[in-house]
Image 1 (cartoon, helix red, strand yellow):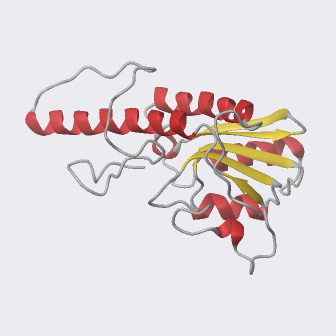
Image 2 (tube, one colour; image 1 turned 120 degrees about the vertical axis):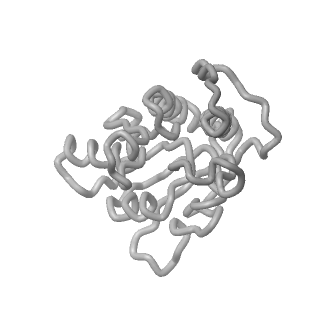
Length: 200
C-alpha cells in the first residue's frame, strides 16, 4: 500500500477526469462537488456523486453511491478487481467501505485536511492491523478537484453573507473560477467564519 502524490500527467488522469465530470453533476444539484467512478479492466462499472443533501442520507457520499451501484450491477459485495477514482480524499466511512469491498486501488484528487482517511488526518489504507490492504494513490488532478470545491464553498459563503444582510446575489456560473488565497490542493476550511454551519 502506498500513498503517492501524482502529477497531472499520471496514468490515472483519464479516470479522474471521469470522476470530475461526476463532481460537476453534484455541483449542478447544489451538493458539495465530489464525484466518483469505478473501473474494472479500464471499463466504467458505476459512477456516483455526493447526494447527502438531496437524499437526506448522511452516507450518500460519492464513493458509497458508486459502490452501491457497482455491487448491484456485478452481483457481489466484494469487488477485488475494481478501482475507484474520487475527486476528494475518502473519509473514514468511505475508506472502510472500500476496504470491506476489497477494492484493489483507490485514486483520489484533493486532500481533505479535516476528515481525510488516506493520510491527511489518518491513514486507514495503510493500517497494518486491518485484514485487507487497498493500494491508494493521491494527488491526481488535485488542483482541478480543489478548484471545484473552492468555487462551491466561495459561492455558499457569499450566499450566507448576503442572507445575513438581506441582499441577493447572482450565482457563479458553472466553470467560472474564483480566486482564493487558500492552499490549492485542500478544500476550504469551513470551521471558521460565518459559514461554519453549512453541510459538507
